[in-house]
Image (cartoon, rainbow, N blue to C red; front, top):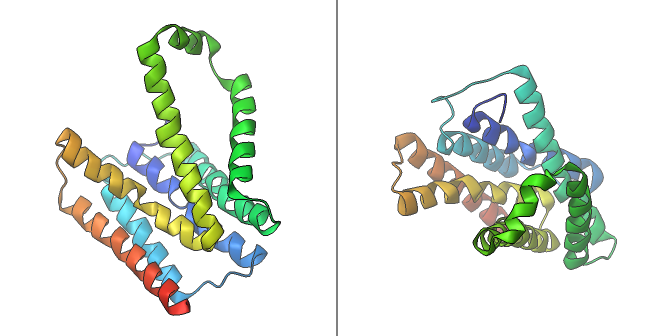
Length: 204
């Protein structure tokens, strides 16, 4: 985000299903079907439109590399998560150790001078706790549970509804306008979800 615009950064992050699909095909022999590829394409284009790509498309080589690195790292949760689940461990075990080691890493990386004063302000601490629980804990719980019941490539594409939900929240809560491109993006992402759901039903 320091090197590219927010729209570009978000789209680079949402290339993660590509990595998940490739790794899953190699490691877990998941099939790369035409419908998956079409759903993936629709989801990425839809995310680009919802994020406003093109309106402020500030691009640089370091930003692209950092963004793709974020996507690759993000995709590893699906890949490693599926491996852990295949080894017989439950999703709660996976979530526990994920947050434990994230906490240990943050202990060395965070700015403690900025963090400390938050504990002295109950209102700020409440917002911080809400941020952690609502935007970090719950999403990982839901996503980990999804990995128990479906392929990682399918779960990662379905997770592309995140920018759609964010766009809808911005419209209804903050009265931000949603242009034709944003509406088209929402339709494309929802179409990707419907395609994947239809493939899942057919497989069953």
